[in-house]
Figure 1 (cartoon, rainbow, N blue to C red):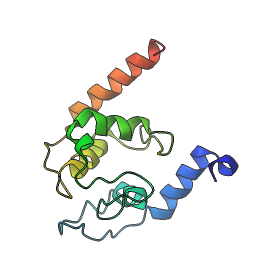
Figure 2: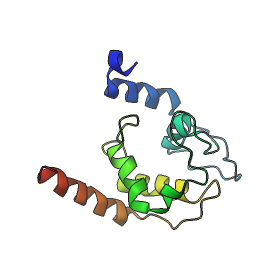
Figure 3: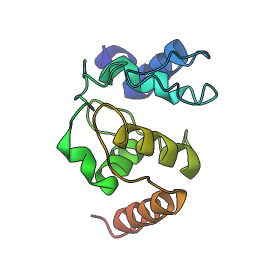
Figure 4: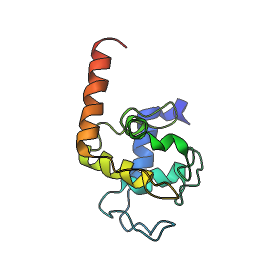
Length: 131
């Protein structure tokens, strides 16, 4: 499907298809911010209970212990996940990363907007140096 639509079009299609208000509570009984539709966007691939679907599971995923890893994935994306660098603010990315790192059996510290800003700056410096 990405060959026909292209990654950007597929990302926009998924974003618009799932960015509806009124998300249900997660497995912990905590509803994410209903104004931040990205939570539902994440659930399409990672599962509403963090169990993983097309994307890796969040539930009990040791890779999520490293805040920089989570922030980097959200900012840069991967071959199979779109980048959300231009769609989300530092505050939104910090909120999503914190939510992922503190639900589904994960118990890691909060991510701050300053953490995201620092990662954006590191990415920009790395891109500027050709790495």
